[in-house]
Length: 448
Ligand SMILES: Cc1ncc(COP(=O)(O)O)c(C=O)c1O
Image 1 (cartoon, rainbow, N blue to C red):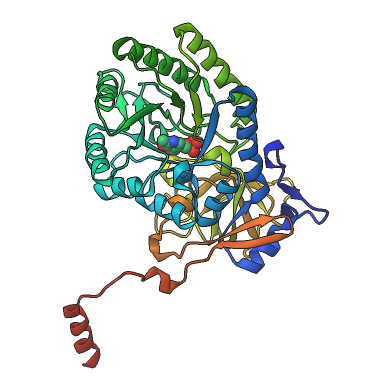
Image 2 (cartoon, rainbow, N blue to C red):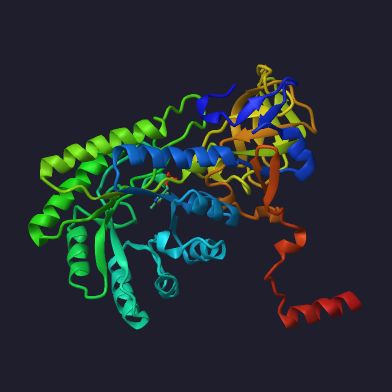
């Protein structure tokens, strides 16, 4: 059933799906559904794979885990233990990372529209790098850093104008992107001069991120070449030689059998070999290399367990399995037609015989988690596992239809710990206020 990258998932002698040896069925019974389940081993393996590959192919390098993929406090702790840097992209992500005790000096602070308050938070915390996106941000950092008496290290986010083969909503490095300083119109050069002329900001180098879920990494390799060409031009015009280059995240994962991304090691090998050649071509010294992966660190490590509530057959080839979650816990299929695989937890080794659609319980016709998945015959009450939900599910989840967010469990061998509690209905009302005049009317109405 599973390929190599899913080694934490197995089918036991009873034909039941297991995660690090724990039965999915008993996790569902113990913690309820919908339930996000993460394999700690799978996450640590991927952190290790990035670290090892970089150590082997580019000794002056580091990996920043992109927290936007998944950022519960326990994951921040895990990333700290794994000696990763952390990419945080908002005041909220920075706050969470600090609450978990993640050292600010190992944080990359992103965000394409950081507020003054968010910039101040980063300066006070002493984040390791500001990744700057626009001129207003540079002005604000310059000014606020004087007040805070802190000289921040800055990487400029460059938009090289490269198209990627991915969904357009997760492509970021193209010529019409809202992100970064564009190369084509000279913004990137102007921004470089702007930081170099500042007595407050220290320009550490450049950053680019082309897009996400890239299974064909040729655009990333092209991005490396374009960035080297840019660094050579900057040296020629300003004399500045970048000491750091961050080429972002983006490596795709195998959501379905047709997704065939390279593994982490061969990706890093190809990338660093391209970088070496490009640097040589421009006679540039080797910069410190950063990677910033999110999806490829946590995506495959996660799965979601749902209970099938109803089964609705409309015709011979149209059956819906209706599950107790949906677009509120996983908006990706509705947002950008993301595709997933699934299995019945108690028949994980049984070959599928029926092609069905897995639909959620939200009031949207677009709330279909999987179109056309081939499964063994299912019954109401069965537990359905949807694979590869570790990235951009919990972090993108909503309370649409006032659905409480699922719980999340971290499995570590025989141990399974709750790391995010299931929301209660009371949690859903947190922060809501009925203005006095409305309460009074309600009371009158109630008293009549
Ligand atoms: C700036 C930046 N870095 C890193 C990432 C992580 O990308 P991925 O999860 O595809 O590795 C993203 C994702 O959108 C991003 O915007």
